[in-house]
Length: 129
Image (cartoon, rainbow, N blue to C red; front, side, top):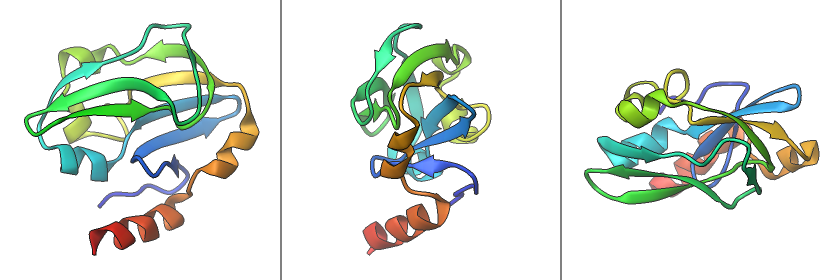
């Protein structure tokens, strides 16, 4: 499994890259593997508020539909419209081209509720058994 350094992760397998007061959000390599071929992405509206660990988007694959949860609270600044027309980007490039949305972070302290890459790797080992 690819678990890049410098990102933060949720138990629901979302990742967040924090740059100043902005955050880029997507699903992890583990999530895209578990889902299989992703066929549809539903993104929220721009400027919508999101709340940490609440549903923010959805993806569908050949295996299942899955809700995506916001790793942090904030306001949606930007959507990756390319994944709506090319949902396979989530499978091919979950951390680069397959990002879902960017938010303005409303509470930096929420980062303490997330896992860093080494803790997330241990978490993955624990659920693999």
